[in-house]
Image 1 (tube, rainbow, N blue to C red):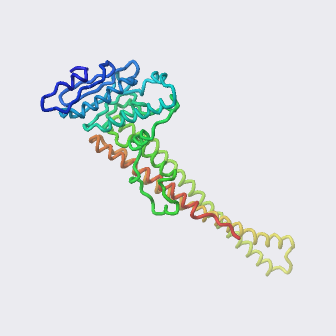
Image 2 (cartoon, one colour):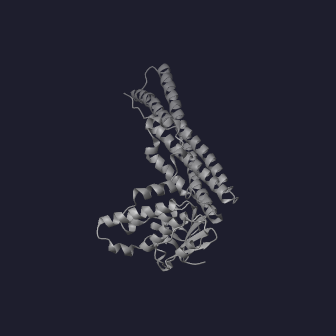
Image 3 (tube, rainbow, N blue to C red):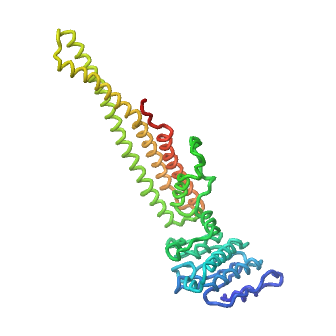
Length: 385
Protein backbone atom coordinates (compact mmCIF):
# COMPACT_ATOMS: atom_id res chain seq x y z
CA UNK A 1 0.00 0.00 0.00
CA UNK A 2 1.32 3.43 -0.92
CA UNK A 3 0.03 6.96 -0.74
CA UNK A 4 1.05 8.35 -4.10
CA UNK A 5 -1.76 8.31 -6.65
CA UNK A 6 0.52 8.30 -9.66
CA UNK A 7 2.37 5.26 -8.37
CA UNK A 8 -0.86 3.39 -7.67
CA UNK A 9 -2.24 3.85 -11.13
CA UNK A 10 1.05 3.38 -12.96
CA UNK A 11 1.31 -0.25 -11.80
CA UNK A 12 -0.91 -1.64 -14.52
CA UNK A 13 -0.68 -4.62 -16.77
CA UNK A 14 -0.15 -3.98 -20.47
CA UNK A 15 -3.73 -4.65 -21.50
CA UNK A 16 -5.02 -1.81 -19.26
CA UNK A 17 -4.07 1.00 -21.58
CA UNK A 18 -6.79 3.48 -20.63
CA UNK A 19 -5.27 4.75 -17.38
CA UNK A 20 -3.76 8.23 -17.27
CA UNK A 21 -1.15 9.75 -15.02
CA UNK A 22 -2.20 11.91 -12.06
CA UNK A 23 -0.99 15.44 -12.62
CA UNK A 24 -1.74 16.69 -9.09
CA UNK A 25 1.30 17.36 -6.91
CA UNK A 26 1.86 14.88 -4.07
CA UNK A 27 0.29 15.85 -0.75
CA UNK A 28 -0.13 14.23 2.65
CA UNK A 29 -3.60 15.77 2.89
CA UNK A 30 -5.04 13.23 0.45
CA UNK A 31 -3.96 9.61 0.71
CA UNK A 32 -4.85 7.23 -2.10
CA UNK A 33 -4.32 3.53 -1.48
CA UNK A 34 -5.26 0.41 -3.34
CA UNK A 35 -6.04 -3.17 -2.36
CA UNK A 36 -6.80 -5.25 -5.41
CA UNK A 37 -9.70 -3.66 -7.30
CA UNK A 38 -10.59 -1.29 -4.43
CA UNK A 39 -9.17 2.24 -4.39
CA UNK A 40 -9.52 4.16 -1.12
CA UNK A 41 -9.14 7.92 -0.95
CA UNK A 42 -8.64 9.31 2.55
CA UNK A 43 -9.05 13.00 3.37
CA UNK A 44 -6.14 13.45 5.78
CA UNK A 45 -6.38 16.74 7.65
CA UNK A 46 -7.69 15.53 11.02
CA UNK A 47 -6.36 18.62 12.80
CA UNK A 48 -8.79 20.69 10.65
CA UNK A 49 -11.57 18.07 10.62
CA UNK A 50 -10.49 17.28 7.05
CA UNK A 51 -11.53 20.70 5.74
CA UNK A 52 -10.79 20.77 2.01
CA UNK A 53 -8.12 22.89 0.36
CA UNK A 54 -8.08 23.66 -3.36
CA UNK A 55 -5.28 21.10 -3.77
CA UNK A 56 -7.34 18.43 -2.01
CA UNK A 57 -10.28 19.12 -4.30
CA UNK A 58 -8.01 18.78 -7.33
CA UNK A 59 -6.60 15.50 -6.06
CA UNK A 60 -10.14 14.21 -5.56
CA UNK A 61 -11.08 15.22 -9.10
CA UNK A 62 -7.95 13.65 -10.61
CA UNK A 63 -8.48 10.44 -8.66
CA UNK A 64 -11.99 10.16 -10.12
CA UNK A 65 -10.44 10.53 -13.56
CA UNK A 66 -7.89 7.80 -12.78
CA UNK A 67 -10.52 5.41 -11.43
CA UNK A 68 -12.63 5.80 -14.57
CA UNK A 69 -9.60 5.29 -16.82
CA UNK A 70 -8.32 2.11 -15.14
CA UNK A 71 -10.36 -0.97 -16.02
CA UNK A 72 -8.91 -2.95 -13.11
CA UNK A 73 -10.52 -0.65 -10.52
CA UNK A 74 -13.94 -1.86 -9.44
CA UNK A 75 -14.88 0.52 -6.60
CA UNK A 76 -13.81 3.84 -5.08
CA UNK A 77 -14.10 4.38 -1.31
CA UNK A 78 -14.02 7.87 0.22
CA UNK A 79 -13.34 8.38 3.93
CA UNK A 80 -11.97 10.90 6.41
CA UNK A 81 -9.05 10.45 8.78
CA UNK A 82 -9.14 11.01 12.52
CA UNK A 83 -12.60 9.66 13.35
CA UNK A 84 -14.06 13.14 14.02
CA UNK A 85 -15.20 14.12 10.53
CA UNK A 86 -15.65 12.84 7.01
CA UNK A 87 -15.13 16.30 5.56
CA UNK A 88 -16.06 19.46 7.46
CA UNK A 89 -16.53 21.57 4.36
CA UNK A 90 -14.05 23.81 2.58
CA UNK A 91 -11.23 25.50 4.48
CA UNK A 92 -12.72 29.00 4.68
CA UNK A 93 -9.29 30.48 5.37
CA UNK A 94 -8.77 30.30 1.62
CA UNK A 95 -11.66 32.68 1.04
CA UNK A 96 -9.52 35.60 2.14
CA UNK A 97 -8.07 35.43 -1.37
CA UNK A 98 -11.44 36.35 -2.88
CA UNK A 99 -11.54 39.85 -4.31
CA UNK A 100 -15.10 40.09 -5.70
CA UNK A 101 -18.44 38.40 -5.93
CA UNK A 102 -17.31 36.66 -9.09
CA UNK A 103 -14.77 34.72 -7.04
CA UNK A 104 -17.61 33.36 -4.90
CA UNK A 105 -19.63 32.40 -7.97
CA UNK A 106 -16.59 30.68 -9.45
CA UNK A 107 -16.17 28.73 -6.23
CA UNK A 108 -19.77 27.47 -6.43
CA UNK A 109 -19.33 26.52 -10.09
CA UNK A 110 -16.14 24.63 -9.30
CA UNK A 111 -17.91 22.93 -6.40
CA UNK A 112 -20.67 21.74 -8.73
CA UNK A 113 -17.99 20.47 -11.10
CA UNK A 114 -16.27 18.50 -8.35
CA UNK A 115 -19.40 17.03 -6.79
CA UNK A 116 -20.80 16.29 -10.20
CA UNK A 117 -17.60 14.47 -11.12
CA UNK A 118 -18.03 12.13 -8.17
CA UNK A 119 -21.58 11.38 -9.30
CA UNK A 120 -20.32 10.64 -12.83
CA UNK A 121 -17.69 8.08 -11.81
CA UNK A 122 -18.46 4.94 -13.79
CA UNK A 123 -17.50 2.65 -10.91
CA UNK A 124 -19.44 2.46 -7.63
CA UNK A 125 -18.43 5.17 -5.16
CA UNK A 126 -18.88 4.49 -1.43
CA UNK A 127 -18.69 7.28 1.16
CA UNK A 128 -17.59 5.91 4.52
CA UNK A 129 -18.88 8.61 6.87
CA UNK A 130 -17.88 9.06 10.49
CA UNK A 131 -18.57 12.36 12.24
CA UNK A 132 -19.30 15.54 10.32
CA UNK A 133 -20.11 15.61 6.61
CA UNK A 134 -21.08 19.24 6.19
CA UNK A 135 -20.78 21.92 3.56
CA UNK A 136 -18.50 20.65 0.81
CA UNK A 137 -18.30 17.33 2.65
CA UNK A 138 -22.06 16.98 2.35
CA UNK A 139 -21.72 17.63 -1.38
CA UNK A 140 -19.03 14.96 -1.70
CA UNK A 141 -21.15 12.44 0.23
CA UNK A 142 -24.20 13.31 -1.88
CA UNK A 143 -22.28 12.49 -5.05
CA UNK A 144 -21.48 8.97 -3.88
CA UNK A 145 -23.60 5.99 -4.86
CA UNK A 146 -23.77 4.60 -1.33
CA UNK A 147 -23.30 6.30 2.03
CA UNK A 148 -22.41 4.13 5.01
CA UNK A 149 -22.55 6.23 8.19
CA UNK A 150 -21.86 5.63 11.85
CA UNK A 151 -24.52 6.64 14.42
CA UNK A 152 -22.55 9.82 15.24
CA UNK A 153 -22.56 11.05 11.62
CA UNK A 154 -23.89 14.59 11.09
CA UNK A 155 -25.00 16.06 7.78
CA UNK A 156 -25.78 19.62 6.75
CA UNK A 157 -24.94 22.72 4.74
CA UNK A 158 -24.81 25.46 7.43
CA UNK A 159 -23.44 28.14 5.13
CA UNK A 160 -26.24 30.60 6.00
CA UNK A 161 -24.88 30.74 9.56
CA UNK A 162 -21.20 30.74 8.60
CA UNK A 163 -20.47 32.35 5.24
CA UNK A 164 -23.81 34.00 4.58
CA UNK A 165 -24.02 32.77 0.99
CA UNK A 166 -26.32 30.19 -0.55
CA UNK A 167 -25.99 26.98 -2.51
CA UNK A 168 -26.17 26.77 -6.27
CA UNK A 169 -29.35 25.51 -7.90
CA UNK A 170 -27.49 22.36 -8.98
CA UNK A 171 -26.63 21.65 -5.34
CA UNK A 172 -30.21 22.32 -4.22
CA UNK A 173 -31.51 19.93 -6.88
CA UNK A 174 -28.98 17.25 -5.90
CA UNK A 175 -29.85 17.47 -2.20
CA UNK A 176 -33.59 17.62 -2.87
CA UNK A 177 -33.37 14.48 -4.98
CA UNK A 178 -31.39 12.75 -2.22
CA UNK A 179 -33.44 13.85 0.80
CA UNK A 180 -36.95 14.50 -0.40
CA UNK A 181 -39.80 12.20 -1.34
CA UNK A 182 -40.73 12.13 -5.01
CA UNK A 183 -44.13 13.29 -6.21
CA UNK A 184 -45.22 9.88 -7.40
CA UNK A 185 -45.33 8.76 -3.76
CA UNK A 186 -47.96 11.38 -2.93
CA UNK A 187 -51.49 9.99 -3.22
CA UNK A 188 -53.96 12.76 -3.93
CA UNK A 189 -57.38 12.11 -2.34
CA UNK A 190 -60.25 12.34 -4.81
CA UNK A 191 -61.96 15.19 -3.00
CA UNK A 192 -59.05 17.60 -3.64
CA UNK A 193 -60.13 18.63 -7.11
CA UNK A 194 -61.49 21.95 -5.87
CA UNK A 195 -58.07 22.97 -4.50
CA UNK A 196 -55.94 22.64 -7.61
CA UNK A 197 -52.59 20.86 -7.53
CA UNK A 198 -51.75 19.80 -3.95
CA UNK A 199 -48.06 19.57 -4.89
CA UNK A 200 -48.02 23.38 -4.97
CA UNK A 201 -49.54 23.77 -1.50
CA UNK A 202 -48.16 23.69 2.03
CA UNK A 203 -49.71 20.26 2.52
CA UNK A 204 -47.25 18.73 0.06
CA UNK A 205 -44.30 20.27 1.87
CA UNK A 206 -45.77 19.06 5.17
CA UNK A 207 -45.80 15.57 3.69
CA UNK A 208 -42.19 15.94 2.60
CA UNK A 209 -41.19 17.13 6.07
CA UNK A 210 -42.86 14.13 7.71
CA UNK A 211 -41.23 11.64 5.35
CA UNK A 212 -37.82 13.20 5.97
CA UNK A 213 -38.30 13.13 9.74
CA UNK A 214 -37.56 9.40 9.89
CA UNK A 215 -34.21 9.75 8.12
CA UNK A 216 -32.69 9.86 4.66
CA UNK A 217 -34.81 8.27 1.98
CA UNK A 218 -32.13 5.81 0.93
CA UNK A 219 -30.45 5.26 4.28
CA UNK A 220 -29.54 1.79 5.53
CA UNK A 221 -30.59 1.21 9.14
CA UNK A 222 -28.19 -0.45 11.52
CA UNK A 223 -29.44 -1.68 14.91
CA UNK A 224 -28.81 1.61 16.75
CA UNK A 225 -30.43 3.73 14.04
CA UNK A 226 -33.43 1.41 13.82
CA UNK A 227 -34.00 1.56 17.59
CA UNK A 228 -33.66 5.36 17.62
CA UNK A 229 -36.14 5.85 14.77
CA UNK A 230 -38.57 3.33 16.26
CA UNK A 231 -38.44 5.15 19.60
CA UNK A 232 -38.92 8.57 17.98
CA UNK A 233 -41.92 7.57 15.89
CA UNK A 234 -43.52 5.23 18.41
CA UNK A 235 -43.03 7.17 21.64
CA UNK A 236 -43.07 10.76 20.38
CA UNK A 237 -44.99 11.25 17.15
CA UNK A 238 -47.50 8.39 17.23
CA UNK A 239 -48.03 8.27 20.99
CA UNK A 240 -48.64 12.03 21.06
CA UNK A 241 -51.20 11.74 18.26
CA UNK A 242 -52.90 8.76 19.91
CA UNK A 243 -53.17 10.62 23.21
CA UNK A 244 -54.58 13.70 21.47
CA UNK A 245 -57.24 11.76 19.54
CA UNK A 246 -58.18 9.65 22.55
CA UNK A 247 -58.73 12.76 24.71
CA UNK A 248 -60.43 14.51 21.81
CA UNK A 249 -62.92 11.65 21.38
CA UNK A 250 -63.77 11.67 25.10
CA UNK A 251 -64.19 15.46 25.27
CA UNK A 252 -66.27 15.71 22.11
CA UNK A 253 -68.49 12.83 23.17
CA UNK A 254 -69.18 14.64 26.44
CA UNK A 255 -69.97 17.87 24.60
CA UNK A 256 -72.28 16.06 22.19
CA UNK A 257 -74.05 14.26 25.03
CA UNK A 258 -74.54 17.44 27.05
CA UNK A 259 -75.80 19.46 24.09
CA UNK A 260 -78.20 16.67 23.23
CA UNK A 261 -79.47 16.55 26.80
CA UNK A 262 -79.79 20.33 27.01
CA UNK A 263 -81.75 20.59 23.76
CA UNK A 264 -84.10 17.79 24.84
CA UNK A 265 -84.53 19.47 28.24
CA UNK A 266 -85.46 22.78 26.66
CA UNK A 267 -87.98 21.15 24.34
CA UNK A 268 -89.39 19.22 27.31
CA UNK A 269 -89.67 22.44 29.31
CA UNK A 270 -91.48 24.01 26.36
CA UNK A 271 -94.03 21.18 26.43
CA UNK A 272 -94.53 21.66 30.19
CA UNK A 273 -95.08 25.43 29.92
CA UNK A 274 -97.48 25.00 27.01
CA UNK A 275 -99.46 22.39 28.91
CA UNK A 276 -99.48 24.61 32.00
CA UNK A 277 -100.67 27.61 29.98
CA UNK A 278 -103.40 25.52 28.40
CA UNK A 279 -104.48 24.09 31.75
CA UNK A 280 -104.64 27.52 33.39
CA UNK A 281 -106.62 28.93 30.49
CA UNK A 282 -109.21 26.14 30.79
CA UNK A 283 -109.40 25.94 34.57
CA UNK A 284 -109.34 29.63 35.46
CA UNK A 285 -111.63 32.37 34.32
CA UNK A 286 -108.86 34.93 34.55
CA UNK A 287 -105.09 34.26 34.52
CA UNK A 288 -103.01 36.79 36.47
CA UNK A 289 -101.29 39.20 34.11
CA UNK A 290 -97.82 38.41 35.36
CA UNK A 291 -98.43 34.66 34.86
CA UNK A 292 -99.74 35.26 31.35
CA UNK A 293 -96.68 37.31 30.41
CA UNK A 294 -94.30 34.76 31.95
CA UNK A 295 -95.89 31.76 30.21
CA UNK A 296 -96.01 33.52 26.84
CA UNK A 297 -92.34 34.52 27.19
CA UNK A 298 -91.30 30.98 28.15
CA UNK A 299 -93.31 29.46 25.34
CA UNK A 300 -91.45 31.72 22.90
CA UNK A 301 -87.92 31.52 24.29
CA UNK A 302 -87.61 27.89 25.33
CA UNK A 303 -88.15 26.37 21.85
CA UNK A 304 -85.90 29.04 20.35
CA UNK A 305 -83.08 28.15 22.75
CA UNK A 306 -83.69 24.45 22.18
CA UNK A 307 -83.52 24.87 18.43
CA UNK A 308 -80.30 26.91 18.74
CA UNK A 309 -78.63 24.24 20.88
CA UNK A 310 -79.74 21.52 18.46
CA UNK A 311 -78.34 23.54 15.54
CA UNK A 312 -75.01 24.01 17.33
CA UNK A 313 -74.81 20.27 17.98
CA UNK A 314 -75.71 19.45 14.39
CA UNK A 315 -73.35 22.02 12.84
CA UNK A 316 -70.49 21.09 15.17
CA UNK A 317 -70.75 17.41 14.26
CA UNK A 318 -69.18 16.55 17.61
CA UNK A 319 -70.28 12.92 17.44
CA UNK A 320 -68.86 12.41 13.95
CA UNK A 321 -65.55 14.03 14.86
CA UNK A 322 -65.35 11.92 18.01
CA UNK A 323 -65.85 8.80 15.89
CA UNK A 324 -63.11 10.01 13.52
CA UNK A 325 -60.76 10.46 16.44
CA UNK A 326 -61.50 6.93 17.66
CA UNK A 327 -60.82 5.60 14.16
CA UNK A 328 -57.55 7.57 14.06
CA UNK A 329 -56.60 6.08 17.44
CA UNK A 330 -57.15 2.58 16.11
CA UNK A 331 -55.16 3.24 12.92
CA UNK A 332 -52.29 4.90 14.80
CA UNK A 333 -52.18 2.04 17.29
CA UNK A 334 -51.81 -0.36 14.36
CA UNK A 335 -48.94 1.75 12.98
CA UNK A 336 -47.32 1.85 16.41
CA UNK A 337 -47.50 -1.94 16.59
CA UNK A 338 -46.12 -2.26 13.05
CA UNK A 339 -43.13 -0.05 13.91
CA UNK A 340 -42.39 -2.11 17.01
CA UNK A 341 -42.46 -5.30 14.95
CA UNK A 342 -39.82 -4.14 12.43
CA UNK A 343 -36.97 -6.50 13.25
CA UNK A 344 -33.28 -6.47 12.30
CA UNK A 345 -33.68 -8.90 9.41
CA UNK A 346 -31.40 -7.16 6.93
CA UNK A 347 -30.72 -3.50 6.28
CA UNK A 348 -32.54 -3.33 2.94
CA UNK A 349 -35.71 -5.05 4.18
CA UNK A 350 -36.07 -3.13 7.43
CA UNK A 351 -35.32 0.16 5.67
CA UNK A 352 -38.14 -0.58 3.22
CA UNK A 353 -40.45 -1.54 6.08
CA UNK A 354 -39.76 1.69 7.95
CA UNK A 355 -40.16 3.83 4.84
CA UNK A 356 -43.51 2.17 4.08
CA UNK A 357 -44.77 2.81 7.61
CA UNK A 358 -43.45 6.37 7.47
CA UNK A 359 -45.28 7.14 4.21
CA UNK A 360 -48.48 5.50 5.50
CA UNK A 361 -48.33 7.71 8.60
CA UNK A 362 -47.73 10.79 6.49
CA UNK A 363 -50.69 10.07 4.21
CA UNK A 364 -52.94 9.33 7.18
CA UNK A 365 -52.17 12.65 8.87
CA UNK A 366 -52.40 14.64 5.66
CA UNK A 367 -55.75 13.12 4.73
CA UNK A 368 -56.98 14.05 8.18
CA UNK A 369 -55.80 17.64 7.65
CA UNK A 370 -57.44 17.77 4.24
CA UNK A 371 -60.68 16.43 5.68
CA UNK A 372 -60.78 19.45 7.97
CA UNK A 373 -60.44 21.66 4.90
CA UNK A 374 -63.49 19.95 3.45
CA UNK A 375 -65.45 20.58 6.68
CA UNK A 376 -64.61 24.27 6.91
CA UNK A 377 -64.32 25.30 3.26
CA UNK A 378 -66.90 23.17 1.47
CA UNK A 379 -69.51 23.47 4.24
CA UNK A 380 -69.53 27.12 5.34
CA UNK A 381 -71.94 28.28 8.01
CA UNK A 382 -74.86 30.00 6.23
CA UNK A 383 -76.62 32.61 8.30
CA UNK A 384 -80.40 32.92 7.85
CA UNK A 385 -81.57 35.75 5.64
